[in-house]
Each structure stands twice: as structure tokens, then as C-alpha cells.
Amino acid sequence: MRVVAVPVRRLDSAKTRLAPLLSAAERGAVALAMARDVLAACADQSDWETWVVSADRTVLGAGARAGAVPVEEEGTSLLAAVRQVERRAVEAGATALGIVLADLPLITARSLASALEPVDAVVGVRAASDGGTNVLVRRPPAAIPALFGRASFARHQQAATRRGFGVRRVDAEELAFDLDRPEDVRTLVESGRGGEAMDMVRDMGVAERLDARPDAGDDRLREGEMQGTIKEFDAASGVGVLLLDDGTEVVIDPASTEGSEIRYLRLGQRVDFDVDEDGDRKLARGLHIVTFA
Image (tube, rainbow, N blue to C red; front, top):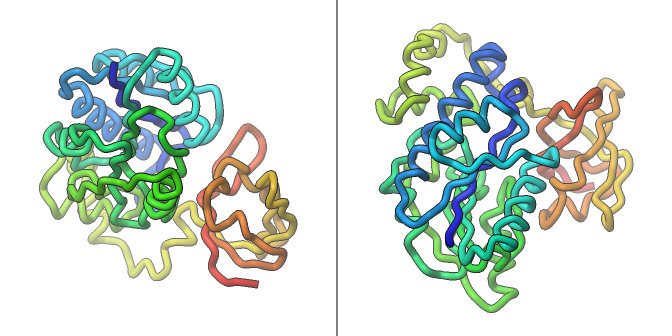
């Protein structure tokens, strides 16, 4: 048994970096369209069982209609979702587990097959935007720890080396391109390729919105990313607090620090990060060091 799993976040909090371009409802619709494109590519893989893991019932329903096994997400982060399907895959006796992120609008069944077919212990696709990992395939499912996030592909390589084997890197443009920011939408529109997500973006008239936008300057800090200073941090647990420039405190999501450079954060260090809602509190995720204290 071989499993390919697609973790998908809740649609009401999806793609916050696209807020300058799309409304919340539009962002959710585009995220769902991309997830459908990914699930369709997964469904075309022979001898692979597709799972979709999410806390969003709309996503789970769409996955079931695409032939995927719906897995209700128990945690609140990408890493927690990946660990959940790891445990389930091991319990089911799976010999291989592929994790495919849900925001790959150019994905095709053929490009995905290029990552699933090699029989190496670890196969990965490096994200073109930030050095993250868009696809990770492991034989067995827990061959190395999953370390998603910025620059995670290099960390996967390091983890594999420590365990005595390398990582087969698959260079497929359709898998390396992910959609996170307005400039990514422009790239998608100009490519003229893609599936349901591309059609939706075109039908929304997003190309015209992009052309009408004034110079965005440094959009990074307005698209869900923020900067702050480390106020408290415990390296052993990954628990900490960030202080925004306006004095607001934001809790660090411990799961986002595992296996990354931010294990070495110090007080006063400057970082940028994504802000997600978790109930009535804000969580800092996807941290990246800006300056060293």
C-alpha cells in the first residue's frame, strides 16, 4: 500500500498573503480550486491511495468526491497534519507516503508521477519561491522527519544525510511553483497554464486587478507576513513570544520551529513571519531570521 496525502488548511483562513488582491471568500475559492487540481493529479496515480487531511468539511467533501479518503485534521498546523497521516500510514502498513502541498496550480498527473515513481528512500521537490518542500515522498513513511516551511528542502537533505542516504531531487516546474503572493498570481496568469485554479483566477478578472494596482512596494509585510522582535523563547520546547513594532505580543507556534534555524533564536533577534488565527489568539508561523542579535 502506498499513500499520497494532501494537507489543506481551512478555507476561511487560506492564502492571507493574497489579501491585497482577493477578498476572503475569493481566497477560499481559489484555495479550494487548487486543492481540487492537486487531488485530481493524485487520483490519476496508479497504485497510490489518496488521502486529504483538513479541518474544513468543504475540503473533505471535495476530496471524497475526487476519490480521496477524507481524514479529519486533529491539530492546527501543517506539521501536525503531516504527523497525523504519518501515524495513520504506519498503522495501515503503508510502504511509502507522499506529502503534496495543496497550492500547486500548475500540477499535472505526469509531473506528480515523476516525483512518486523513483524508489529512493527520500524524494523531494524544492519550492522555487523560498526553498521549501512542495512534495516529499518517503519510503518508509517516517524515513526522515518532515520539516516543512522555508528552506526546508535543505533541512530534509541534511536529515537524510544523517541517516545515511541522500535525497532524490525532482526538478519539475509544475511542482516547484506554488501560489502564495500577488506576484505568483501574475506568474500563473501569464503562464496561460493550469487547471481549475487558473480558470477561476481568469474568471475573477484578477489579471485586470493586477494591472490596475499601484506600485506595491514591499508587499511582503502587507500580505500576511509581519516583522517582530523575539521577546521570549525556549529552544528546548520552541515556545516563545514575539513583540510587534506596535507593542502587540504574538505567540510562536512551537510546531513551526522544529528542525529549522529558528531553534537558535535569541532575545532581541529580528524575524519575519506569517500570522494565523487559532481561535481567539494569533499565532506566528513560518518564522525566518531577518537579523542576528
